[in-house]
Image 1 (cartoon, helix red, strand yellow):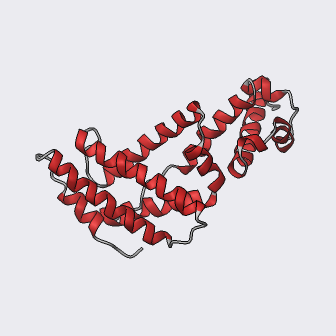
Image 2: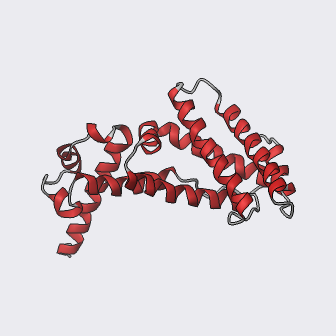
Image 3: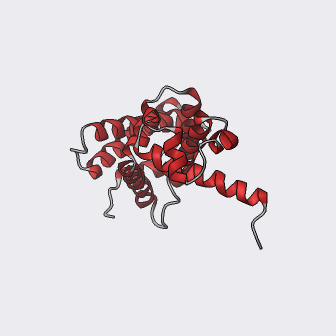
Amino acid sequence: MAPTRAERAASTRQKLLDAAVDQFLDKPYDEVSVQDIATAAGVAYGLVAHHFGNKRGLHLDAVREISRRLEPQPPPQGSASLQVRHLARAHFASIERHPVAYLGLMLGTDADSRGIFEASRERAIKVVALVLALDPDRPAVRLALRSCMAAVDEAAIVWLQDERQVPVDGVIEMLMAAQAAMLRQAAKLDPAFDPSSALSALDQREDR
Protein backbone atom coordinates (compact mmCIF):
# COMPACT_ATOMS: atom_id res chain seq x y z
CA MET A 1 0.00 0.00 0.00
CA ALA A 2 1.34 3.40 -0.95
CA PRO A 3 2.00 5.81 1.93
CA THR A 4 -0.69 8.36 2.64
CA ARG A 5 -0.16 12.09 2.23
CA ALA A 6 0.16 12.46 6.00
CA GLU A 7 2.73 9.68 6.13
CA ARG A 8 4.77 11.26 3.32
CA ALA A 9 4.65 14.62 5.10
CA ALA A 10 5.77 13.04 8.39
CA SER A 11 8.60 11.25 6.61
CA THR A 12 9.77 14.47 4.93
CA ARG A 13 9.66 16.35 8.22
CA GLN A 14 11.71 13.64 9.92
CA LYS A 15 14.29 13.66 7.12
CA LEU A 16 14.69 17.42 7.53
CA LEU A 17 14.98 17.14 11.30
CA ASP A 18 17.55 14.33 11.07
CA ALA A 19 19.58 16.32 8.55
CA ALA A 20 19.41 19.44 10.74
CA VAL A 21 20.58 17.51 13.78
CA ASP A 22 23.52 16.10 11.83
CA GLN A 23 24.46 19.58 10.62
CA PHE A 24 24.10 21.36 13.97
CA LEU A 25 25.97 18.66 15.85
CA ASP A 26 29.14 19.62 13.99
CA LYS A 27 28.64 23.24 12.92
CA PRO A 28 27.55 26.47 14.60
CA TYR A 29 24.16 27.90 13.66
CA ASP A 30 25.57 30.61 11.36
CA GLU A 31 27.58 28.06 9.36
CA VAL A 32 24.53 25.98 8.42
CA SER A 33 22.17 27.13 5.67
CA VAL A 34 18.65 26.03 4.90
CA GLN A 35 19.94 24.80 1.56
CA ASP A 36 22.56 22.66 3.33
CA ILE A 37 19.84 20.99 5.37
CA ALA A 38 17.45 20.50 2.45
CA THR A 39 20.22 19.05 0.29
CA ALA A 40 21.32 16.66 3.03
CA ALA A 41 17.71 15.58 3.53
CA GLY A 42 17.18 15.15 -0.21
CA VAL A 43 14.09 17.36 -0.27
CA ALA A 44 13.10 20.69 -1.76
CA TYR A 45 14.33 23.88 -0.10
CA GLY A 46 10.82 25.25 0.37
CA LEU A 47 9.73 22.31 2.50
CA VAL A 48 11.75 23.68 5.44
CA ALA A 49 9.38 26.64 5.66
CA HIS A 50 6.38 24.37 5.14
CA HIS A 51 7.24 22.09 8.07
CA PHE A 52 9.15 24.37 10.44
CA GLY A 53 8.31 27.94 9.47
CA ASN A 54 11.94 28.96 8.99
CA LYS A 55 15.51 28.04 9.84
CA ARG A 56 15.07 29.12 13.45
CA GLY A 57 12.06 26.87 13.92
CA LEU A 58 13.98 23.92 12.53
CA HIS A 59 16.98 24.78 14.66
CA LEU A 60 14.92 24.79 17.85
CA ASP A 61 13.49 21.36 17.07
CA ALA A 62 17.02 20.14 16.31
CA VAL A 63 18.22 21.59 19.64
CA ARG A 64 15.49 19.62 21.45
CA GLU A 65 16.73 16.42 19.83
CA ILE A 66 20.39 17.23 20.47
CA SER A 67 19.63 18.07 24.08
CA ARG A 68 17.83 14.75 24.43
CA ARG A 69 20.86 12.92 23.05
CA LEU A 70 23.13 14.65 25.57
CA GLU A 71 20.95 13.64 28.51
CA PRO A 72 22.14 10.80 30.73
CA GLN A 73 20.65 7.39 30.09
CA PRO A 74 19.55 5.18 32.99
CA PRO A 75 22.67 3.83 34.71
CA PRO A 76 23.37 0.09 34.99
CA GLN A 77 22.50 -1.87 38.08
CA GLY A 78 25.00 -1.60 40.88
CA SER A 79 25.96 0.53 43.83
CA ALA A 80 25.11 4.23 43.92
CA SER A 81 28.83 4.95 43.65
CA LEU A 82 29.08 2.95 40.43
CA GLN A 83 25.89 4.45 39.00
CA VAL A 84 26.71 8.09 39.64
CA ARG A 85 30.15 7.71 38.08
CA HIS A 86 28.64 5.91 35.12
CA LEU A 87 26.33 8.88 34.58
CA ALA A 88 29.27 11.27 34.71
CA ARG A 89 31.38 9.23 32.30
CA ALA A 90 28.47 8.84 29.88
CA HIS A 91 27.89 12.61 29.99
CA PHE A 92 31.51 13.44 29.22
CA ALA A 93 31.63 10.78 26.49
CA SER A 94 28.54 12.33 24.90
CA ILE A 95 29.90 15.87 24.89
CA GLU A 96 33.24 14.60 23.62
CA ARG A 97 31.40 13.11 20.63
CA HIS A 98 29.52 16.37 20.02
CA PRO A 99 31.71 19.23 21.29
CA VAL A 100 30.39 21.85 18.86
CA ALA A 101 26.78 21.16 19.79
CA TYR A 102 27.55 21.13 23.51
CA LEU A 103 29.51 24.38 23.45
CA GLY A 104 26.80 25.95 21.33
CA LEU A 105 24.21 25.06 23.96
CA MET A 106 26.37 26.22 26.83
CA LEU A 107 27.74 29.43 25.36
CA GLY A 108 24.80 30.47 23.17
CA THR A 109 22.63 33.41 24.14
CA ASP A 110 19.40 32.36 22.41
CA ALA A 111 16.75 32.34 25.13
CA ASP A 112 14.63 29.61 23.53
CA SER A 113 17.60 27.29 23.10
CA ARG A 114 18.69 27.92 26.66
CA GLY A 115 15.18 27.14 27.85
CA ILE A 116 15.31 23.77 26.09
CA PHE A 117 18.64 23.01 27.72
CA GLU A 118 17.37 24.11 31.13
CA ALA A 119 14.55 21.58 30.91
CA SER A 120 17.11 18.92 30.02
CA ARG A 121 19.26 19.94 32.99
CA GLU A 122 16.30 19.58 35.34
CA ARG A 123 15.73 16.03 34.10
CA ALA A 124 19.41 15.22 34.64
CA ILE A 125 19.25 16.56 38.19
CA LYS A 126 16.30 14.29 38.93
CA VAL A 127 18.24 11.27 37.65
CA VAL A 128 21.23 12.10 39.86
CA ALA A 129 18.97 12.73 42.84
CA LEU A 130 17.29 9.36 42.30
CA VAL A 131 20.64 7.54 42.18
CA LEU A 132 21.85 9.28 45.35
CA ALA A 133 18.50 8.91 47.12
CA LEU A 134 18.11 12.68 47.53
CA ASP A 135 15.02 14.86 47.47
CA PRO A 136 15.61 17.40 44.67
CA ASP A 137 12.76 19.57 45.93
CA ARG A 138 14.33 20.08 49.36
CA PRO A 139 15.70 23.66 49.18
CA ALA A 140 19.20 23.02 50.55
CA VAL A 141 19.56 19.82 48.53
CA ARG A 142 18.30 21.50 45.38
CA LEU A 143 20.80 24.30 45.91
CA ALA A 144 23.61 21.77 46.20
CA LEU A 145 22.51 19.73 43.19
CA ARG A 146 22.05 22.71 40.89
CA SER A 147 25.34 24.24 42.02
CA CYS A 148 27.16 21.01 41.22
CA MET A 149 25.41 20.70 37.85
CA ALA A 150 26.62 24.20 37.03
CA ALA A 151 30.11 23.10 38.07
CA VAL A 152 29.84 20.08 35.78
CA ASP A 153 28.91 22.30 32.84
CA GLU A 154 31.70 24.78 33.53
CA ALA A 155 34.25 21.99 33.97
CA ALA A 156 33.14 20.42 30.69
CA ILE A 157 33.46 23.73 28.84
CA VAL A 158 36.99 24.31 30.12
CA TRP A 159 37.91 20.66 29.50
CA LEU A 160 36.82 20.94 25.86
CA GLN A 161 38.37 24.36 25.32
CA ASP A 162 41.66 23.12 26.77
CA GLU A 163 41.58 20.21 24.32
CA ARG A 164 40.92 17.54 26.97
CA GLN A 165 44.38 17.81 28.50
CA VAL A 166 43.16 16.60 31.89
CA PRO A 167 42.15 12.91 32.12
CA VAL A 168 38.38 12.67 32.23
CA ASP A 169 38.34 10.35 35.24
CA GLY A 170 40.30 12.98 37.15
CA VAL A 171 37.73 15.61 36.20
CA ILE A 172 34.93 13.32 37.32
CA GLU A 173 36.50 12.63 40.71
CA MET A 174 37.01 16.37 41.21
CA LEU A 175 33.30 16.86 40.55
CA MET A 176 32.36 14.00 42.89
CA ALA A 177 34.36 15.71 45.64
CA ALA A 178 32.70 19.04 44.83
CA GLN A 179 29.23 17.49 45.07
CA ALA A 180 30.12 15.85 48.38
CA ALA A 181 31.36 19.17 49.77
CA MET A 182 28.16 20.90 48.67
CA LEU A 183 25.99 18.25 50.32
CA ARG A 184 27.94 18.62 53.55
CA GLN A 185 27.24 22.35 53.43
CA ALA A 186 23.59 21.62 52.62
CA ALA A 187 23.39 19.60 55.85
CA LYS A 188 24.62 22.65 57.75
CA LEU A 189 21.93 24.77 56.12
CA ASP A 190 19.29 22.13 56.83
CA PRO A 191 20.22 20.22 60.02
CA ALA A 192 17.36 17.75 59.44
CA PHE A 193 18.96 16.65 56.16
CA ASP A 194 21.10 13.52 56.44
CA PRO A 195 23.54 13.26 53.50
CA SER A 196 25.40 10.18 54.77
CA SER A 197 24.15 7.74 52.12
CA ALA A 198 24.92 10.11 49.24
CA LEU A 199 28.30 11.00 50.73
CA SER A 200 29.21 7.34 50.97
CA ALA A 201 28.57 6.95 47.23
CA LEU A 202 30.43 10.13 46.28
CA ASP A 203 33.43 9.52 48.55
CA GLN A 204 33.88 5.88 47.59
CA ARG A 205 35.80 5.69 44.36
CA GLU A 206 35.19 2.47 42.47
CA ASP A 207 36.71 0.87 39.42
CA ARG A 208 34.59 0.77 36.27
